[in-house]
Image (cartoon, rainbow, N blue to C red; front, side, top):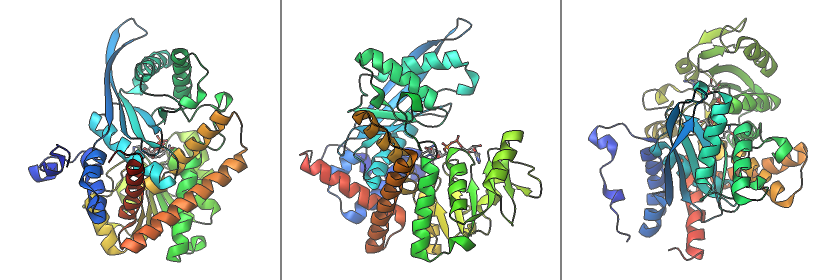
Length: 429
Ligand code: NAD
């Protein structure tokens, strides 16, 4: 047994403190580890990230002021391949959040069957308050400082909340200077012109739709008669809407940070997109009623897709959820307490590490294209992504059925088993 006390420390909830995302990530891991009777040494290693780089760095503002920012890169585990995970810019970024997200990436890559480990990064900043030049300086400085631990075969970052293909272009350019090579495989989610993949933008929403279709087949839900509500009509939510509509699902409610809209006869993707473009928010779409984000979650629909924030389905509202199927587009939208309530109610929940793994799977396809200097068509990428998602779903479904557990625990058991096997065969334990 390794010399640590982590498993035996009192859980924050029992001390009356709010659980962090990392506490939740460890709790989810522990459920599966206990079920698997996972070797104690393996548990100790997997409960914590292998390495966390914490950086304080100055950025010169346009008006000449120097501001100090804090950023992190957490590398959780690389038994299955190089570390992989996004970098987010947000005022609420903390080391605890980045640690949790890096752990989830390890399981997500293992579930998807792609040869990556898990990492995540972030800078504590409100990017909306910075000019484009300030953002560029911040991005270049941060990336040059983490260059010592990233690389095309070490750790491959990607966009996350409030970072995008432009940020990746700056990252790639900065790393290429340090590496003295044109290293486009060091990040994914790049603009197409410098090696981005076709289909990356829509990949996560597409993956959500594929997992919903697979679940519906098993649960005998006729998608042509099914209704759906989507919380968060951003990248993931809007493309999930588009692909679910293509599959025949009637999307009756969608929302953004300012609230939601509900229309019993269905909200067409094109209608919502045109309205959002014109008004910048979703509210007040003609012939639909405005609803709150809380009301959206409790609508009488067959399918619910939380695709915005973490911790939105909790012990306070889980009993009021009416959907039969929940597909987690967002990372961490459901608390462990809510998981139990939904499972007891007979709700099938497709966990984030499966439902939203289409993004990282297409990042993998981008990386493969970069390393081989070849380009696939949108159809080729789509075909490969669909195959990855279907296989991942089948494996998680099988494990959950065999173990008689909810799909999150099933996904963890499947993912942890793969990481454990890789650690063992590499001689780590
Ligand atoms: P995004 O910024 O494009 O969209 C987020 C959406 O959520 C926006 O419509 C925003 O208005 C809405 N929103 C913000 N605050 C809200 C609130 N309080 N209530 C309701 N809606 C609110 O982000 P995204 O890329 O779509 O990511 C959404 C989630 O999916 C995040 O949890 C992210 O980590 C996860 N995710 C994204 C990807 C990806 O490829 N983009 C991949 C995996 C997981």
